Length: 323
Image 1: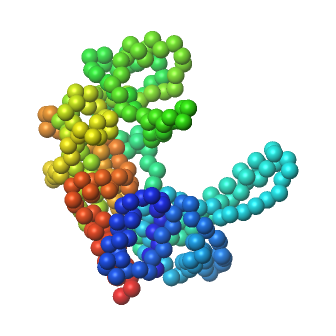
Image 2 (image 1 turned 45 degrees about the vertical axis):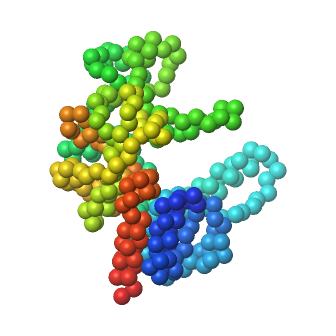
Image 3 (image 1 turned 60 degrees about the vertical axis):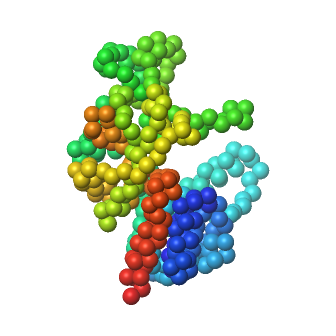
């Protein structure tokens, strides 16, 4: 049996599953974050584990391959009685922690199977990623984090952009949704800001020729790259101009590929989605990495059929186990 952990609206998972069905593979279970999960039994020391997902039973002894695409396991439905609101909140916190421990154990057991993707590597730290990229001899932007007096700590002769230290979160105000973009910033504005603000991340603005999105398979040394061209002068974030951008397949120099593979080895990533920049002087600069990322954008725009390749790899690994 193949188990796939993902999110309901992940279209790339849909495409891979369609290819698996075309290849004659139907012995799989897809787990979405909002499915109905029941813990049937967990038995120690035998470590026999049995779940049901939407009333479909999963016996871990029968699982041969696990693909972690993203998301988490849905918390089982449960009830309790607590008339006191404060006690109810405490019980909720306790139950959520109980589920966290149990959920991580279940993922740990699934990760012991032949697998692609890793639940425990799903969240990465951008700052740590920059450090490791530098260790792999990849170029990275000059990066600064401070809370005040930026002009005293960095070179005012350069232009700077500001971006989140972690991931971007959406905001909703009066039922209107807003998202964060990378933006050029004025140091004087930061230094003269009257409110005490949270530590902010600044990077030197790079003279961009075009941005690159890359999906990579470590084991197979395969890279699928897409160049993003924008005609806008304010090109620090291509996401502002999705409708007018041009997206083309591209290739990476061999030395850049080797450095990205070294990065994946250090991070223990079997797949990765990289954000790079090619500068007007011809250099390749590492920005970020996501263990999963928006593969469907590269796949559909460039016609790479990564979904078919993914299904072929799963089939190949699954067949090896069966035989």
